[in-house]
Length: 355
Image (cartoon, rainbow, N blue to C red):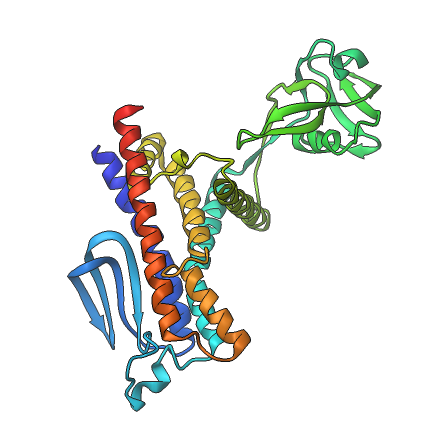
């Protein structure tokens, strides 16, 4: 339990700090005064004031905030502070300040993945055949266990993923495959067949296959800084895309809302990853950081995405959204978030005691 709590505090602290750091740095870049930079909500525990900014640790460690000069559009601003006021900055600057928080969460993921790739490199799964489905296309064509496919239709194949993609996009037409079998090179023509399978969301999907599994033949690959950066960006993009797709599937009802988890589940998972080692905990932190960034971009009032909607409307109409509309939207947003918090806590408790 102590490991889970410590890991949870570390992970959450890093995520909150980076998120608020994004708001803070871009606000200062555009000359906006920052009154408070807080990790946590509620009463101030301790901190230090530098200039006009109170850097503080607050009592409730489930979030954080950056309070800027003139953040409330209806507040009376001293003419002397007008140059520091958030509300008096151009709308596109305000958009960039608000978007910087979730963007920094995505940036944190890239940084973590970059470090992991630089230290550990990556692994390439070679296109070496393992088990073959009896009566399947590969079986009928004469493919054997241990064969390595190095070319399909004249296109060089270096990894299992490249091979699978060629087969998946074949449209069911016969494929000329060149193969290493021991010291020999042979050619086989394999005609993929369409198969219904479950995707990661439990939905039935159809794809072309040849009826083989991987032999698990992997080779390590060291990465230079440029390759590591490219892999880090690709990994962050892939997880971000999957996160967005998961949210869409939840809204459509394709994924059960029982899969949602809150702080208790995150703490348990953080503890599990911490016990597996620092690399696992870092990967988990990157994963949660991406989720936090994507969720904050959702167009829900009180989240960054909700503010971005208001500012986008202002940019298009050239006048700010009325105070009344903003107040109603904020109340709706708070209600939605409270319902979501209650539900994820219910899911967490149900998993703890009834699963």
